Image (cartoon, rainbow, N blue to C red; front, side, top):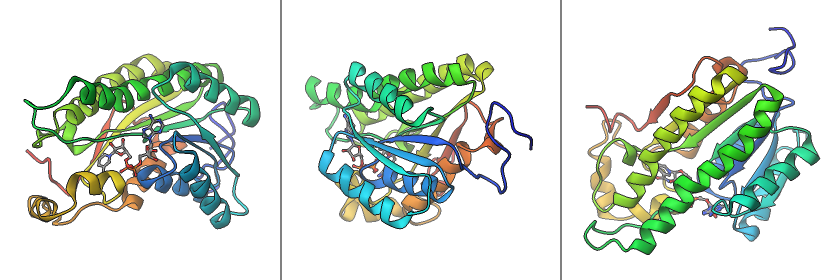
Length: 264
Ligand SMILES: NC(=O)c1ccc[n+]([C@@H]2O[C@H](COP(=O)([O-])OP(=O)(O)OC[C@H]3O[C@@H](n4cnc5c(N)ncnc54)[C@H](O)[C@@H]3O)[C@@H](O)[C@H]2O)c1
């Protein structure tokens, strides 16, 4: 592979040396695991999260584990604030010179029967999971277009594929990501940018526990052909692949990491 606008020649598969990767929701759970995966492949990693305390703790863990990596940066930002997100991405480009990879992992869940779901809860979930993702995609895409290279990975969910009890707002927010990501893939593809989604089953992060801790979670495992939930590293590995030079022809795809739960 020769040096090009897509980056320097790569020594090994999925090498991300020289790349700058931004992970929203990077202070916790899947976002931190993804950031760890990127750091392991040599990328400079920028964690972006609204929780400043957990953000610094996650960044410190990553720095300790990858002292010789591309570097770890941490930025406090609320993805629901479009202007703040744009300023954050601008500041990252000013400091690191580029944004090659964006992973949208910032997300929230709240479970309510559909006839009891309040407009406020609906709005909160949609504003973080769908509109917040749009803000970050738009801010990053503007810079990626100028550079002629980009990788966007949006974390959807099994709940975007199948109806789950009390998941109306969450499922709608995650299904919305398919429409958003398809448009990104179509419009940005000619500029060397890919956009894809990942749809995991339950992972026992803080968010996963909020929705699935307890007997109903154990019962849910029995509905998954693999008979277990997913691990954060299994999601991170897929994100690393989709963010790599090698995945240039994977655009507008959704990768289910659900042990077969959504097989129809
Ligand atoms: N854990 C699961 O079972 C599961 C399954 C499928 C999809 N997902 C999705 O994966 C993503 C990551 O979830 P997780 O399990 O790691 O959850 P998590 O709660 O461990 O992490 C979510 C992170 O997002 C951050 N965040 C929330 N709102 C934000 C905002 N407005 N601005 C910036 N940051 C914000 C939180 O501070 C937190 O650090 C979410 O989009 C979630 O919907 C999770």
